[in-house]
Image (spheres, one colour):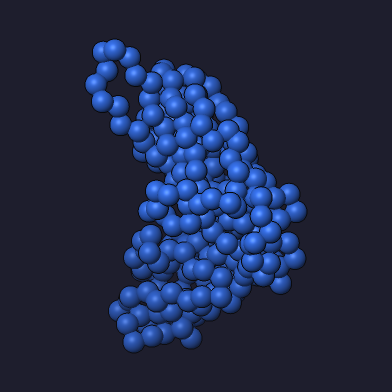
Length: 224
């Protein structure tokens, strides 16, 4: 597999919360074992204050905080108009796997300030991925991204991730035609594989992988 190009730019990805004036400074959080912590900035571009509450879950659609692995400081705070606040996420356990990344979800709920003339206020939520990355993994991340194996199947193709990193796809193309991606198939876990439906089962293939900066790297190869 040959790397086609690397595009190191920040994706303009906005959630419903950021459209309302409150958002996060990045689209993913990477916690390295060496530091066991990371930060993210919440910003308020609106003209009213918001109550911001953050928590971490194991599953995307879970509403129950995952306890005992991380501490968020501050976890709840008031964000004034046109202001920013740094949120620190610290890993507090040694239970993480040492041979591969693990993935969680960071939730930021934003509730606008109420006054006596307001009706019911509906809070909005931003959700981004958190990756905990152990030290001394067996290969560089770039090798993992470029080394994805693609094999033909009865119903399409299978992407195989033989690395300790998560592969988060931004795009997949067979013979220059796009393959449908969704929340269920756009992430390939470490040492796992995912099947993709396609009427084309051979030829050239291109895949784009989201990098740590929120941009993406593109690669191409041939279906085996």
